[in-house]
Length: 208
Image (cartoon, rainbow, N blue to C red; front, side):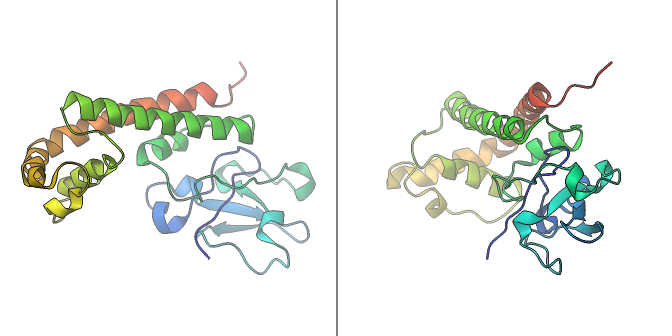
């Protein structure tokens, strides 16, 4: 079985898999598990479920440990399925969530996630146009190649197959080598701004 997760039954923030986010976002991986029977207990969620409670995972209520205040099972709403499996998130969105007090509902969290991902797609299209790079169904491969170049991973023209005519791929790869660092820095900054704006738009408001 693959990765899966839920949202916090109290804050509606995602419970993340420690296999991908343990170092970057410990607040969102360290939880208190509240079973329907028995005592709550702390855990670091690894992304593959929890055992030993005598009930299905979807019956458990998960609360971020930093937000737990002794609630019992009946005090909490449900932990809803996490849309991105507690793993497949942009780092910029997770960074914004770490500072977020929570959402008023699971729907509000899903709306924030959806709006951010729509904005991410629009931003990538804008940056491709700005740098005069090919757009189209395979253009996501340009982002993958730029990320690999920034990480100093080996890249070949074959990684761009389908993005442009075959005879143009070597030239396109050379162009990407030239712009990788500034392109990815600009993208990261813009994504961070988008994530903060989106999360703040939907997060719960503190009362004066």
